[in-house]
Amino acid sequence: MLHANELALVNLRATDSRKTKMKSCCLLVLLICGAQAQSVAIEAAPGADVHGTIHTELDKTVSLLCRALEEGAELVWRRNGAVVSLKAENQRGNSSVCVTPVLHEDNGATFSCHLGKNATVRDAVTLNVTFPPVLSGSEEVSVEEKSPLVLSCQTFANPPVSPPLWTLNGSTVDLQAGSFSVTNDGSTSRLSCGAVDRGLHEGRYQCTVDSPLHGTRTRVFRVTVTDKTTKFPLTPIIAGVVVVFLTGVFAIFSRWSTITKCCK
Figure 1 (cartoon, rainbow, N blue to C red):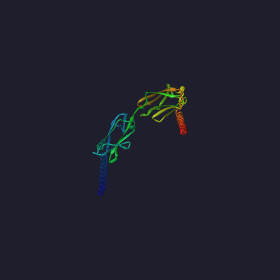
Figure 2: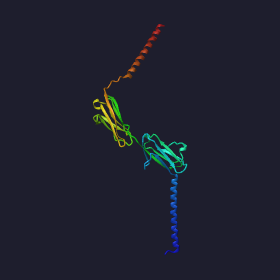
Figure 3: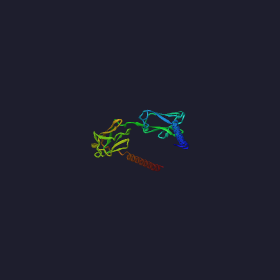
Figure 4: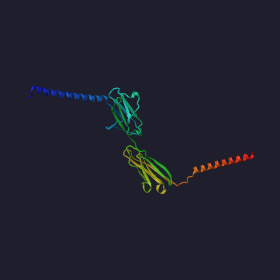
């Protein structure tokens, strides 16, 4: 059996332990309540997914509303870190931003809202703008023999498209046989040749890409090779005519001066 002193000591320790737990719980509650009192949240139309991403399309409208639980709190909007200019009445309590129309440049843009007095209390969303490549229709191309040929195919899209397939008269372009080269910078694919030969390069070219969201897109180029023309060297001829004219003027002026002196 425990003596009275030992029993008192056990009770004291139990009391201290309960007090410590109570203090910890109170502190946790205060921290949670304080965080909630300062929190901000963005409501979006269309809504954001669980990752805070808003999926939209070109020329659409995205509406963002930032709410602060603290009544009358000053709010600051940022787009990719840069402050968004707002009217004074749109900076407190509830603050809204509208993105219209949605452009290519808005793809990947992050909009954040935070308390003016505490930038760590914030919420953010990111735009994912989907758009197809501008690739359709046909184009007539005329090029002289032995001149360079360059055909451009726009591939800029979100989500990205497959690497372009170039065909000539229905068959995949033979780069080696036609002395072709293909370059692709991520937004434009170019098929080029340094010196056109009618037998090799004239015909119907087609650039085709596949989009996982927008399907197959194609552009057609009808290339006609013409005879090479001899270009008239206008610049040297004009320069020569000017020199001859000025020489004649000076000669006449000099001769007239001589005749005038003889007549005096």
